[in-house]
Image (tube, rainbow, N blue to C red; front, side, top):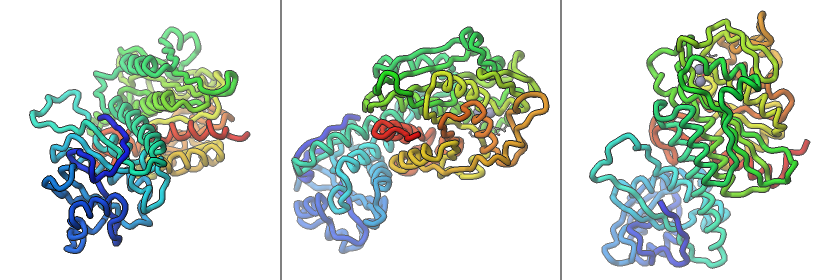
Length: 503
Ligand code: BES
Ligand code: ZN
Ligand code: ZN
């Protein structure tokens, strides 16, 4: 889909459809009032008759029959004005865009809703509208025959009446497109079946993005990992015929010697559990166990386009977790890059093993602060359900920044504590640490394990196991991988570029 910004009146724009909005309990205003007037009060009449009430996600489609240039007007309810924030806008626009697509509409014009009656920042509103449309219209159909009557919206036009706001709308629309397309790129990767996305494929896709966006890309092979001493990652990889890859991307927008923000993502392209094998029901979902890795690569792609003044490095350890003849066994002891020995009590707790080496490597590169993203534990789904990712940190100021970044993206997070008491669970009798505790506080013990490898570098761990998979479309989310937290990570980079974390 293309996005463009035009100056003019929405009621005059000759798109197949335009979207105007209505608040609950309020008369039409701004663009909606203008369209209503041009249609001889058609919208007011729908309101009077009780058909259009402005409830959130309410859709009322009008055919204009030649009275104005656009042939359809979709009246979209935004709910109560005081409840309508950027997140509501993003999600309702997504619903409207899908509705128009299902009606065979191929071009849609709209305005930066919210900037008028709600008085929100026009740039932020334009961004939310663009994000909502691009995210909500996402589909993954690479492996399906195209249906004869398949429908697609090719063009989104943001129409702005005031010359003074035009630049802001253009900037916001562009930023929204970049962020949403990066998110959709991450969704593509996580939705891809594991036979189409091996660690080698993942490294190739990362290389292609890097080449397209001007990022530096380096991929460490097994030999180099052996030389470095990444025993934890290699232990996981040894059960698979697919060679592991350690993907590194650099974005250099800051001062030459300034420490880079580190983004580290779990890249398990399929998680069978290894010898501690998972039950068959639901195992297919484990093709998305690289969603954290996909998110950090996608974030790098957006960062490269938005060009904040900061250095950022992404690290993605990528491997399968398979129960092959060479697989590691419960009870094995491996040694991570930082020299710590790990008792592998359960081979299904493999994410923390590969991240142990990646976080040690982040320290070796001097990255700071560091955010890691991983579909790490089923326990986070028990704790927080599907509404929010879990966040665990050794640096409250860093988490504060991330909280703002996630709120702006509409990707919720919630903190879990890293109290000393929980460390008992991962003490080993045969090694420096073991990779699982008992069943208690599973997400927290996972994070405490990771902390042993990032040590005192300011760090936050995001457990996305609950938010990665979407069962049913809802607002900007569609069935499949959510692409969370790509936009949060990009917002974090932008925030740290504006103001570094004070130490
Ligand atoms: N990839 C899984 C976590 C997961 C579970 C992601 C559900 C998405 C949905 C991870 O590698 C895993 O298997 N974790 C184990 C850890 C346990 C053995 C301590 C888990 O959560 O059961
Ligand atoms: Zn696992
Ligand atoms: Zn896993």
